[in-house]
Length: 577
Image 1: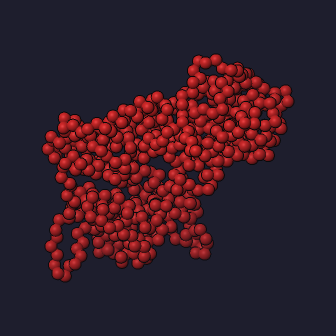
Image 2: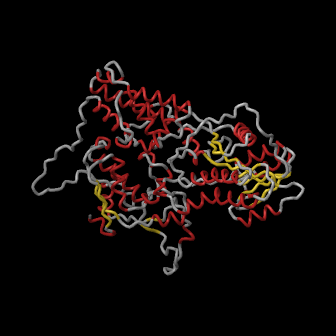
């Protein structure tokens, strides 16, 4: 038969525990110098552990370790900080062999973990191995090296990712699921084991920063460390093998769960059952002329379009926790605003309720900006479809099959527009100048009069674009990190494309959604090699930032153009394309 896992509320409550557990002797904590390891070490020391062994790869090089050690000593514990990769069996065995006989090992706490998140189709074997090694290999080593010892507690820090799953943790979730299974295996052998699938902890750790904000947005806000440790103590005393312990905001978590992985996992949770019932009522409610849709249909076309745009911006701001709808750029792509698959469904649900329309879950991806989405809602409510933007007709002579109506350029010598370029040519002015001083180059070391010296230049001047580094990334909705990964040719092309449209007397935003085409002749790309040498953290953007084929599409995307986008990489002859 087929079996499906169900989550239930753990009925521990105030029930008396079958045993009392107080740490004694030596307690070993992997990841002991990290945030979670530190919280556990403080509790162990305060609860009676005589000796703490904090194991981590960095050992005493870890930030804040001196303060943590002093705090633990003040609580009455002896402290050993061991620099050891616990995934290395022999190294871990050496740490265990050095434990003092007067304080035998009684407690093992495995908190070590690494997060190297990425979507499944971009995960590398190295990322998988890196994440699994910290969780799985270390846990196996601890299990095998201590199975003959008389332990009171063997505690594994698993994660909700191994129970519920979420996007971006395809290499992290399996390791946590393994810890849960290892706890079951140890119990079958008559050995102590408790695995906790944790939600987010406060007080530092992997849930800090963007990952923590994502968890909070998806209904799993952080919990106070003191409360989490108390729950762990209760789980061990109640002899639990595996529990999931998390702070859950059910209104957000239910939307996130049912949008991305619907199934029976949370179907027995009372909070989820109530939300499911509410959702069912909303989905079966018939559209009423006096309802939300009726209010929109009674507006004029112009009023409705503006009201729907305001609605989309307000609801997007609410989902993303922006200050208000005015903070949402109506032309910005939802992806760039911060939407993912879960928040996209939440926005769709909000709009469906507000308009009484049946909307697809792919709504945000089908209509990728607030303006485009508002236009679609207008059409769904009976408004006329927007007329595609057409360029004004131009009368051409028989001998003029192609008319150039605007130009823009960037050339050395300060020739940043066609007029300056023509003036420079007319005057015969030299565009060669000194090496720029804003590129991080050591100009003195770079120069060597010997033309055969490698890695140096035997000239001190050249034809440079002094303003090439002054790209306004925010203007084009590009993050600083992505801008750094972009070949300067792409940055310059965005600038001159925008300027060319403006110089034609056209406001660039008017072309959004039109059949305007982009044709680019491009040249060689060597910026990627410079990024590798510089060692900048631009992973995830370097591919698109340095591919010749991307350049026309980037311009089309920035301007919202829906005509052909063609890049022709012909090397030096690209100026003739």
